[in-house]
Length: 383
Ligand code: TXA
Ligand code: MG
Image 1: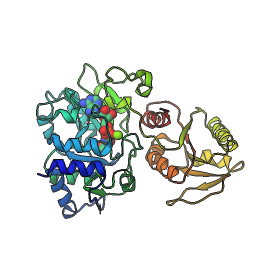
Image 2 (image 1 turned 90 degrees about the horizontal axis):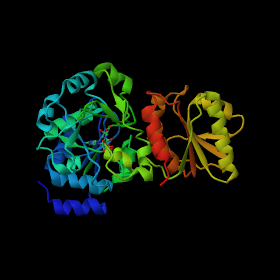
Image 3 (image 1 turned 45 degrees about the vertical axis):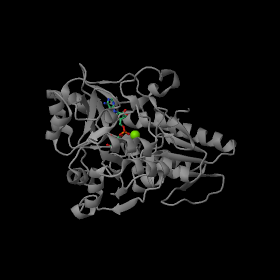
Image 4 (image 1 turned 90 degrees about the vertical axis):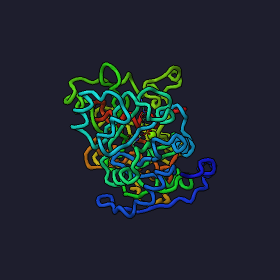
């Protein structure tokens, strides 16, 4: 066990000696993860890759260790954490009465980007669940996450490894940017496959309810459990007037994912109109002498090349003249899933490039675009 008082002070001051370890995401070597797993078990913080986003892990059974997560992130204490495990049999220690629905969903989507909310057992500290009588459980698929949890030998509580309010991290450098000096280890497993967080599904009530849309869609869940509904307008829950009372998923009431630049969403349903809309937004932004970046598909960008001068944003930041528009394209065709894989990385890269305004391509609202549009709407939300 570590000295939690000293550790807490170092986390708060950003004074920890963070170690970054590069690991082959497909074939993690047990030896590379050994010291991080031991530190995790002993009460330290370890950031690690998952197939959705990077997680900021602590021993879920150690209430003191959990407090370090909230300190490192600057996270409000009333926002509960997801508990990550490897073996489905371990759910029985954490949750009561695992229903047939839960069993079928686990069989269909686990390991993977699905989080289930179940009635909690005593073993789970109240700091993990923010005092709720339910616990969020996920079985990640990422080999590095799995090896870390297996070696640690304890369930691992992990929110996304960003400072509260910032875009979730999908690359190790994003974690480094937000949490250097505040975690003991960062395991660098490259980029996260999905790029958006898991679907959070509440199974603690009468009916399954999606609290946070994610990679597993409502349709996929419906195919397994018959019916499912989406929590009443989760995006609207971040509006200040809706902040009173207890939302069903506490995290939904906070501002999220926000870049430093102002984010505008071009959400016309028709592709041609969306292209037009982005053109108009660029024009207006430049008329105000502001620097602008866009995130869109190549089929959207192509017609705009006739009107504007674009500078594709590579790995490193480049200086452009005021009239050039930084661009990040994610695929040839417009597609919510593909856009979702680059979104958080694109927001951070455009911020680094120093733009004032980011224009992101929205998608027609349907179940496949729900996760992407939910994150975009929250990131665009003004305080
Ligand atoms: O993909 C993911 O889910 C990532 C990776 C690291 O697993 N984790 C993640 O955690 O996104 P976080 O803390 O950023 O988001 C967890 C969400 C929050 O909206 C929180 O309010 C909700 O899950 N949540 C956690 N426990 C809950 C509970 N018992 N009841 C309702 N909502 C809960
Ligand atoms: Mg988060």
